[in-house]
Image (cartoon, rainbow, N blue to C red; front, side, top):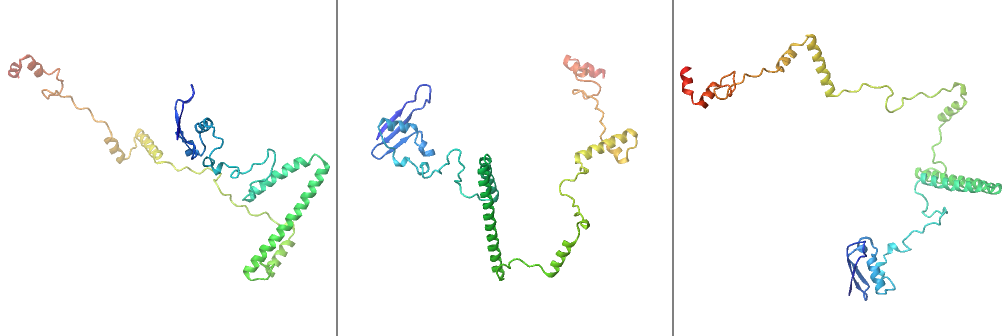
Length: 272
């Protein structure tokens, strides 16, 4: 077991990391713990391997997720090769085909010969797609007929005589007798403004404003007069002297208090 203390360069990281290397077993441990956290060996272990002249990194440090087999091969720059398979939804398929047709049209529109070739290929592809869709529809109809116990190509419900006559009558109606369909009220928010429901605070403010207006005009309701009197301010009480408990003066103006402070309380009592 070999131990190495990696001292940082001046002006960089101030922390020193210790690397323990077991060359025989190919085990390297570092306090940075990069391999344990993200699966990549840290530069401290690489520096120790360079110092020990290790020519090959041990297989235990080469995880499968970093190998070439686990990585999806990317297309060459500028190529439009489909490497992700068939899209899962019809919308993705439509968008993919539109991009391919746009690229093909931009490349084939500069020459008459390329235009003819591409146009012919598109017409042939249209016929092939129509034949494939027809075969698929026939297969679906046959499966439905098999489930319903009907002969092949009779899975769809045939129109009755009454329905056929009604359809023929509709076909014979001249275009001048046709009318526009009835208008349906669209869903959503109405165009006309509806009355907004007032909040309780607004209703209270409006009632208080009406009461103040009636009070100014002198037309208060008897019940409102009682509430008005109950809310009137009370008159302040007369101030009492805290020493003699008489009204009309304070302790600084109290004669008894001043006499007591000067020692003439007996004379004042006799005078009283």
